[in-house]
Image (cartoon, rainbow, N blue to C red; front, side):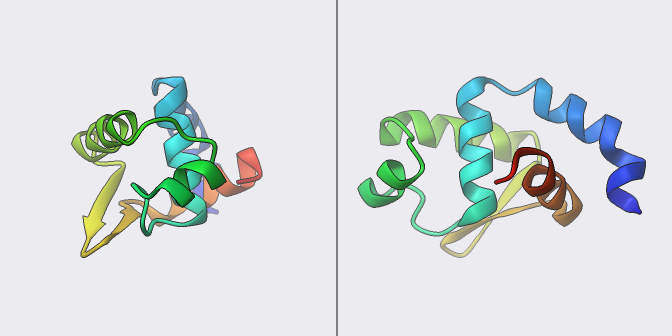
Length: 89
């Protein structure tokens, strides 16, 4: 299985993120739409829009997520599955 074969890499990738980047990443694994709305922030216990924007930009810079229209998606769908399985996202 791809996830098992890549689990060390995925764990290292996740570990190197800031705590807030991890929270945003987990939130995006559940829903990647309207991530800058007040409702989204409240539902996923995120802080200010500016903090979320910085975290998202860093995740894009690291090629972990990408923007597709108005939605943010994982660049690697297996990494998303890893996050969901590992962290009960």
